[in-house]
Length: 637
Ligand code: ADP
Ligand code: MG
Image (cartoon, rainbow, N blue to C red; front, side, top):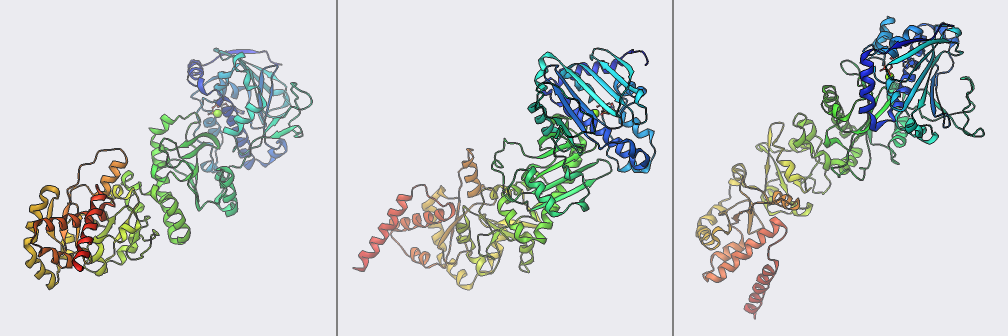
C-alpha cells in the first residue's frame, strides 16, 4: 500500500472554507443537502456513462444513497455507489476549486447526448460545507474504473491540509464520513437527519435510505450495499416535474398536486414545461380550485417551490411569478442556479427575471386556454381568484392586454350578478356608432344595475359593464383602453357621454327651454353646495341625479381611500335635472321660495342617496319626506 501523502489546499479553498463556515453559520443543516446532491450527481454520472457503455452494467448495483449515524462516535456517513473518484480525481476535485468537477467530467466524454444532460452548470463549493459541522472529514472512494485495491482515502480537518492514501475498497462509489464538532452532535440523530432529508432532498430521484436503529441501540451497523433489509427509504423520490410530459397521465398530475401541496381538491388546470437554451429549467404550475386562507395577507409570502437539479432550495420564492398571479402553486427546477443561491441574489438575478417573464406568459396562456376550452371551470377560477388577477393592470403593463382579456364582468346585457362577460363579448355587441366601452362602479350589484345614470342607455340598448368589487374603481385607473377602444365611466361627466344623449327628443328640448329659469333658481339656492346645476337627458324615471366632474375623484374612489384610512378630498357634485319629469315640471311652478327649497333639498338628497348609498343626515331626509306626505294628506281632506 502506498504511503500517506499530505498536501496543502489551494489558497482559494482555504479562503472559501473560512467564508463558508462563517457566512453559512445560521443554516448549518445544508451540509447534508450538499453531500446528498454530490452523491446524486455521482449516481447520475454513472447512469449516464452506462448509456454508452452497456458492459458496465455488471459492475453496478442498484443505485442508492445510504445515510448512517452514530451518536456515541459523533459521526454521520453518506454513501453512494456512483461513479467514485480515482487518486488523481480526488486531489483535483477536493483539493482545488474553480475546477468544477462536473466541468471536467463533461470534457472527458464527448457525445451529443450531452446537450440534453442536466449536469451542466455546477458550482464547486458544496463539498466544503461539510466543515461547517465537522472537525474532521474522511472520504473513502473508488472509481468505477479501478480495482478493489485501488481505493483512495482522503482526510482533512479543513485547516489548510489534507492527506491522501490508498486503501482497499470493496464497492465502487464514495463514502463521506463526518466527525462532528462537539457543538454539532445534535445532527447525529435519526429524526433530525430524516427531517433535513425530507426538507431538501425528498425529490432526489435515487432512493435515500437510512439505517433505522432497532435492537442494537447506539451501535452503528454497516451492512453491505447489497442488503437493503435494514435500510428504510426516507425520500419519496417522486420528482414528477423532471419526467417527460408524455409519460405522465392526468391522474398522476392530480395526485401529485394533492400530496405535494396538501390540498384535498383536484387542481383546475396545470402547465408542465421543460425549457432548454439560455436558461434550463422545468416548471410545473397548478391553478388550485380554492384560494389558500392567507392569500389576502400581503405580508405572507407566496410563490413557487424552488429546486436546483431536484434538490429543494426554498419555499415561496415569489421572485418567479408576479404578485397578481400569487394564487398559482408550483415548482421551478433550475439546472443552472447554484445550490447555495440566496433570496437576495435571486432578486437581482437576470436569469430569474427571464424565467419570471416566461412563466408569467405561460400562466396567462394557461388561463386563456382554460377560458376557451372549459368555461365552466374558468368561471370557478374567476370567482375564486378574479379579484387577485384584477391587480394585474397596475402591476404589469407589459402583459396588459393578455391580463384584461381574462377579466369577466357583470353587465346590463346579461342582467345577472354572475361575472361572465368578457371584454371581447362586450366589444362584439357594441353598437355601430359606439366608440367607447361603458362601465359603472357601485357598492354592489343592485345599486350598479338600478343606477339612474343607466336609464337612457338601457333604453337605447347600449350595454354597460357593472363593476361592484371594491378594487374596481382603483383598477379602472389602470385600464384606459382595450384594443384601442377607450373605457368611459358612466358616473363621470364627459363630453362623449353628452354626445350620446344629445339627440334629445323634441319634447325634451321644448321642456328644457321652458324650464330654463329653474336652473338659475336652484343655483342661487344651493350655491357652492354643488359644483354645477344643469339639465340632462340621460334620465327617464328619475327627476335628478348627481355626477362627478371628469377629472374629479369619483364616489367609489373616495370610499376606497377612506376605507383604507387615507384622506379623501370632499366631492363637489354636478346636480343634473330631468326637464321632462313630472316632479320637475311641478316644482318649476312653485312660487313659495321655502317650499321650492324644500323640494330641491329633497331631490338632492335622493340623488346623493342613490349615488353614495348613504346620507350624511338620513333623519333629516326621512323627516322631509314625512312632512311632504302629511301636506299631501291634508290637501286631500
Ligand atoms: P460540485 O458538486 O458543485 O461540483 P462540490 O464541492 O460539491 O462541487 O464537489 C466537488 C467535486 O467533488 C464534484 O464536482 C465531484 O467531482 C467530486 N465529488 C464530490 N462528492 C462526490 C461523490 N460522492 N462521488 C463522486 N465525486 C464526488
Ligand atoms: Mg456539489
